[in-house]
Image (cartoon, rainbow, N blue to C red):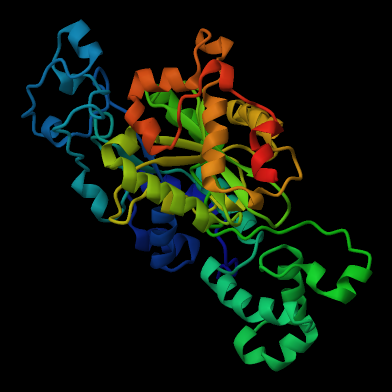
Length: 436
């Protein structure tokens, strides 16, 4: 009897081989000495989707293509140039107003994948495969992510903050709080210290007099990740693969600009092609404040304009971006964006956003508390930055290029105004009145 609790690469190779033979879950389970539900969960958890066509046929998963009822022409420039029906194109789906996604009904029941399907070489629909090597990599990534960060949600952190922070500010110690509020806190004294030292509470370790007198230990901070498996299928390699198939879609870059540790921060959204950058003030660097901003933009812009502007978002590995599902889908479960992540310690993978932060730092240097500014102040700053002419844009400003492509109405929604060339200020003097 196999006593190994987790599936190994060897076991996954056996699953892939047997799926190719059309072997049932029950028989695969007997081979591996596992329960059939284990095999079923393993396959469904690691399905790889591939948008590939067939011999002399482009990928097309439209319902009207499946039943050959489509007679449209000239939906895209490629079809117009080649004078052919759009169903044979493969790239018209995203632009066609009549597009309806069609999935193979066989994938709704076991084995849920196309490994043993005899029609896969002639099929133009999206295919699903189980591949042992990719399944093993996803498992290892999930295992690593699950052992990092804190295992509490934002709601639980907020509940603890409401209990612990007021008492710390009163001068009570963590030891005292953990004893007299153990039924409410339900965690160890050491864990509470860890939460305070990592800045998850509104009270800081400076509010603990004894801690301030002691020399701090050297320890690596542990961010609060909302979805510990958020990077699976969203890595930079996945981003490059996706962009190779969707080169016509704009990919915007998002990042955070820190003022002082534990204080308010900025969320920046950089439109790469237009070099326009938006900045939004947030009270704290958590994921909820990020998703609230995108939800607000979605509400103001509407689904069509939002999808045109933000189809792809590239972020770093900050914990504030660790809830990608809340950004990707609206409240009704409709996909509105795709989120991908840069590799760890690789800011050069989104250089446009990072370089544009230099303008912000010229006006608000590092170490300055963003709490002294309002969102109106930040909008004024970004209006000056976006009105500054760039050589890379043919001596045009990001404001002018964006307005030409999308219209000034959207810039009004973003509260970005055009500043005349003589009035542009890119130094601390812009906020000299606010500082007084």
